[in-house]
Image: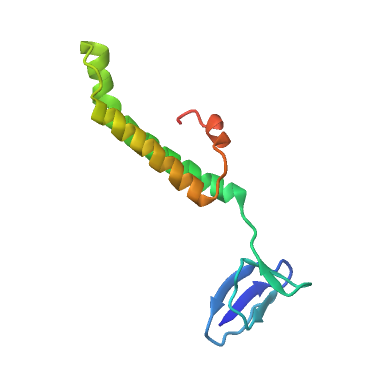
Length: 123
């Protein structure tokens, strides 16, 4: 296995088992990468986490679940508002399950807090 990295930053670009011609600014390491960056000085792999990318992924998950929850509650809120018919408990339970599932997926991404939600009015 060859790890192809950027010769300046050490960023892992891709891996291959093929013999390839390297482009300018790339280096091939005969190594199976255990991170997404190579430390030239210590000769070890390490990981750099892109918080912006993780936050954008979390936002996509939030928006998806917000739509699911809105669709679930729409007709029940109309019935409550117009006819004073209470929202059934099974619908409330499903809403709570969807909220929990959403939060679990976001935490699994590695986003430790949900402060980004305050900047998005649709959440």
